Image (cartoon, rainbow, N blue to C red):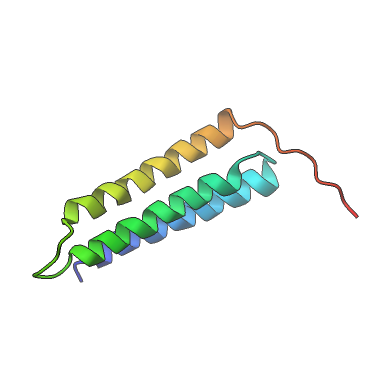
Amino acid sequence: MPLLVPLAIALVVALGASLMWTWARYLAHRAYATPVALLVGVLAAVGVWLLVASDGTDAQVPAAAGWAVLAASAVALVGGWVALGTVAPAATARRRR
C-alpha cells in the first residue's frame, strides 16, 4: 500500500507523456516529441525504482531521492507540453512511398 501513491503518480505521468508524444508527433506535427516523451518516461521509471529500492529496513537509498526524481518527471512533463506547444519547430515532412 505505501508504494501505491507513487506508482499511481508515475502511471499518470507516463500516460501524459504518451499523450504528449501522440499529440506532438501526429496532430501538431512538432519536432522533438520522442526525446521529450522518453525523458519523462525514464524519469518516472527511475523515480519509482528509487522508491522501491528505498522501501525496506536495510535500504541504501533514501526515499527523498525517489520522490525528487518523480517530481522532476512531473515538472518535465509540464515543461515538455509547454515547450512542444510553443517553441518546438515544425517537424520535417516525411516522404511517402
